[in-house]
Image (cartoon, rainbow, N blue to C red; front, side, top):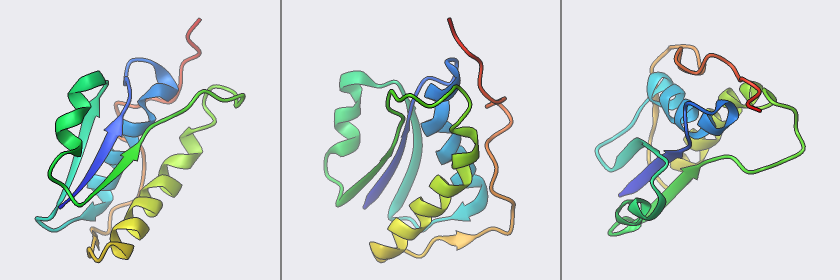
Length: 114
């Protein structure tokens, strides 16, 4: 079993990158029953159950950096393809749905939060 987890707060601009990526991945790829793709939000200690009793975990999240707000928007498609490549390496066979890879509509770009 493999869990693909998107971490982040969708109300805080770039911090919503993890949920945006897993949403875009689910839109672009179909996965088998041994892969669970989930937007877990900002779980804190509630992340622990997602790490138990699985073979692998792919976590998509952001880190503090010097990049300007909005720099991650272009990286959504790269991250989606990286998830697909990791799943293939793990022996899973994600199937392309034929839809374009794009951030979900709720991730309306990035707002500079002061």
